[in-house]
Length: 103
Image 1 (tube, helix red, strand yellow):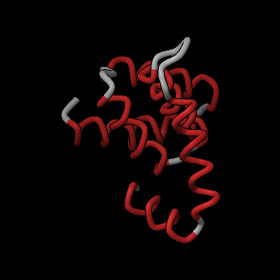
Image 2 (cartoon, helix red, strand yellow):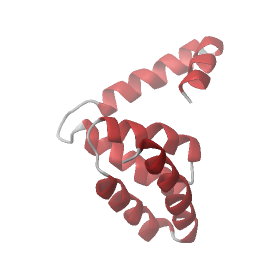
Image 3 (cartoon, one colour):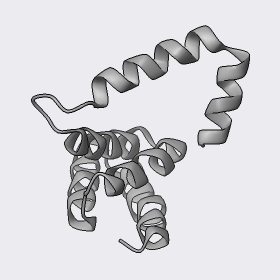
């Protein structure tokens, strides 16, 4: 994912720099910790069924100290809000990523 984002940045620097600036501003610690925000993005990615987002945000949440249990609670919230498709992404994609990360 990071390689593809870098390639896109080379072809659309204005758009990607603006997006990365927004990302950096949103994800920094504030009233909510960066970890909490990454966990939220995992839930949103499950609800929106964005596998690429999950491969970005699950490892980032883990890097910031999120546990398997915290991530799966975010998945459960997404399942409540998004139903069956969220179950598929939560049970297939997120579990695969967590297992690969050995979390």
